[in-house]
Image (cartoon, rainbow, N blue to C red; front, side, top):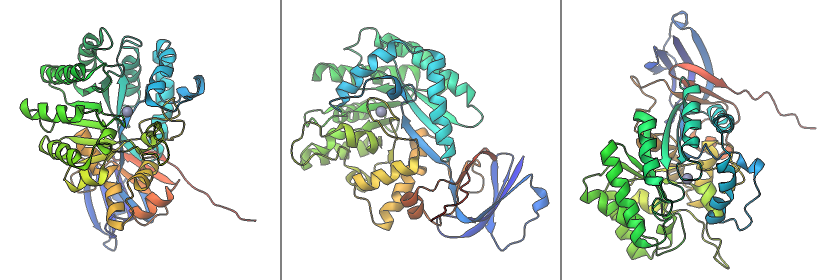
Length: 416
Ligand SMILES: [Zn+2]
């Protein structure tokens, strides 16, 4: 299997030819250098459009996507109502139902240039292991086109929800090598139990030799301090560099002195951060009167401290978030607004958050370079990452392991 992309514009503005053989990028040369096209099975002319490594979606809940079609809307708009609204649907999940909804969103993400997805899946006493079974079946269906990692996520707490610790162990056994341990320590009845929740996560992660990817302090409550505890315990347990935390909205509610102290600990523990601007911009700030909080964490301060920050779609049309289509360029655009990242240098970082920064979270080799896996997106009609994030172009070609897995064309606009 071989493929060549002619007239490809790289992120630094070079016009190049990209050659792929046996799933690997074998050559990137200046476009004016002659290549022997007969050597390649597939020839694509990018027509001077931007070509980069494919996009990554490191945080989504594929078990819950699109349940907005069959559930009452969230009236208060809060996280806590969204969790409760989901219970009824969760009780009636089936493998086929989950596969159908998850597949629709995965296909959308592929269309938008995504080849790697990390999904969380609820593991609790309401749905048991049914959501996990649904997503394991989905993973098998998409195994040739998407790298799908699954996080066993105790959405309802661990101590608060009897039997969840045992279910998490079963999930880790069932999921095999690609399963990751999730958490939600701020969803316990008191601070002592939140700390116990963190300690359970570290014990299980060590026992099963898996990384942790934990929803953490997803609240505006300035007293929610589980990130600090998790980071400190990770250092004590020598578990640095194996933890990702999601949301960490409360960091924005701490005063600047405490926030700086926590950010320093996060850096020291080499913890990755996933911020989810679409969902948190609508869920957070609901108790604020007057000027409402934006809802996301301190992205610029984390980046300035050298913390790896990436972004997630999180939700697609469910009680948590009524919008979303899985387009990571749209998510990057939203982060630009929420974090006020508007200089060209900051917009460049926005693109990193959906490519190389996300690759660090998923622990995959992922860059447009000779020797790397040929996982590539062509963003037709745009010249640079600024245009890509500004216009979210509809026409894209997605390549996984050197094979075209999706192509969307844009024919024309007509004005009268
Ligand atoms: Zn989430």
